[in-house]
Image (cartoon, rainbow, N blue to C red; front, top):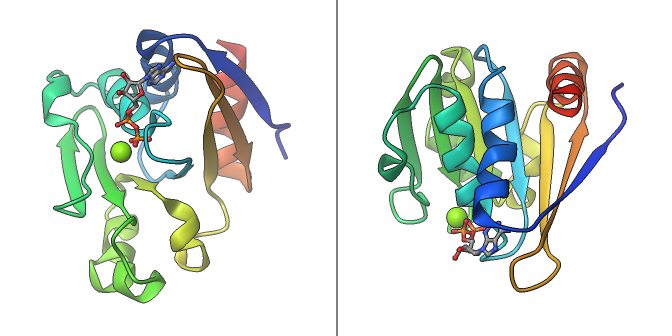
Length: 157
Ligand SMILES: Nc1ncnc2c1ncn2[C@@H]1O[C@H](COP(=O)(O)OP(=O)(O)O)[C@@H](O)[C@H]1O
Ligand SMILES: [Mg+2]
């Protein structure tokens, strides 16, 4: 298993750049669990990731808090979910989570800690912490072969 990686971001731009670096190496089928409090930068990181994955308009990438699922078509197809308002894993299932995984898209789940039991084991967990007014600690942990590959490349670029 790949070793965890840790970055400190000092700006929105750096957070997006870290996301973009991962976005560039996506091939579809990855599951990314995002964990961190409100304002930690989860959505900013996804904007960068989507841009790296070939989604050209960053404005289409927004927190899916109210719609629950956003979809972006880039070089890979991305499902961007927010579990904040879900009662639990069963509700994520009802949203068609398994079908999203089976479709071969990259699935990103904000507030993943609320639905952790439905997520596949082989997922990349990205945790964002507020470390200061513009500082964010961003950690990546892999939990299987696909996520390990992602993490290795994320670290070495
Ligand atoms: N280094 C940083 N990385 C990301 N966001 C930052 C950073 N510094 C300040 N911010 C601010 O924090 C907020 C993050 O918002 P957002 O990405 O929507 O968080 P979340 O989706 O985790 O609730 C934005 O208002 C952004 O301007
Ligand atoms: Mg958000």
